[in-house]
Length: 252
Image (cartoon, rainbow, N blue to C red; front, side, top):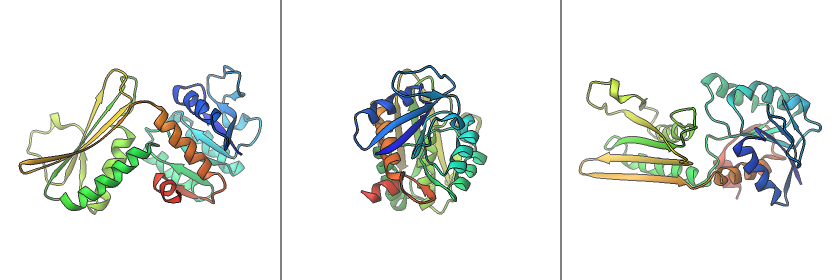
């Protein structure tokens, strides 16, 4: 039985993760971390990881980038594995996460959906065949409460595509300020915010007289919660290192 703690436990995703774990037999929630320490009647909630009543096997993080320092400090001091599913990290914070993975097991993904990661693999295959001949644009849509833009998932998809194209491409986020023709080696990134859209991502390959679009749409936050819990169970017992969805997929 994997003992898990949830950071951001009283947030929307934290509550969904707790509900998912409650219905499983291979893991359990022993505590939560949240600035809002209101008890939920199921497990204790503390304001920071250092106050956890007992050491978990793994921490699932769906909180905020500002919580990263205390989270990694606790995990490094105690040797606790961590699933990091928060988005909006700076380059410096991403480097911190990778550095921590040299000492502890870290599962880090911009998107915990199995479908999104399949989309990334399909996009890489398409880019290998079409790169240089087709223009590439990524359009992401999310609810009106999302703060960061473009989404971490859109960046992940762009990086996956760029990786198979020898990193020759650069990202263009603000086309209205560019009074010029589209450059050959660019990937356009477009963010739409509105309503209660959970998450939609389109990768457009536009060539001469034909367009290919790869799409993924999430109908609820549960797809991300299920992926995060699967990652936590997978990560428990693993050695130090940086893991992502491809490692989870390969393990199955």
